[in-house]
Length: 160
Image 1 (cartoon, rainbow, N blue to C red):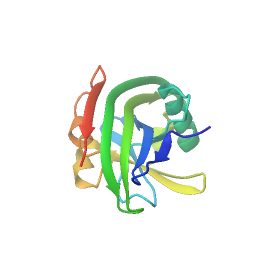
Image 2: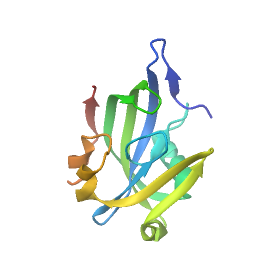
Image 3: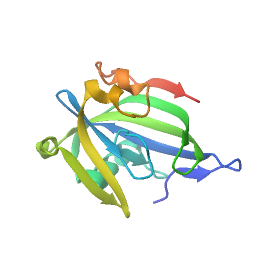
């Protein structure tokens, strides 16, 4: 399948991705990789002709071998950011959703290191109240994840 990801004539990269909230009591699962100097919600690029729900299921299966029983969408985020690693500007459209895993085994793992298409991905649980102490993106989510998640999809724009 082909990712919804391309580079424009001006060098800006556009990507359409899903970001996934997995909570366990007061902790949340976050991810990082060698080409990012920050932490973020697990997820990945949506493929052409792929639904949001199918993209969420596929990404969780690829990254964590995890099946989910409930998907709830909370935010549609349009953002712009500069990646220090590859020195590229990004324009990103992201759907942020929460899931409930079918298997609770994921909650017992403190840190998960996986290899996706030859790239190392590190995932770990962090106390939600400690998100503001690390370099977490998108920044606006730090305060929102501490509250009850919205019942209806909210739209957020973060251009810098």
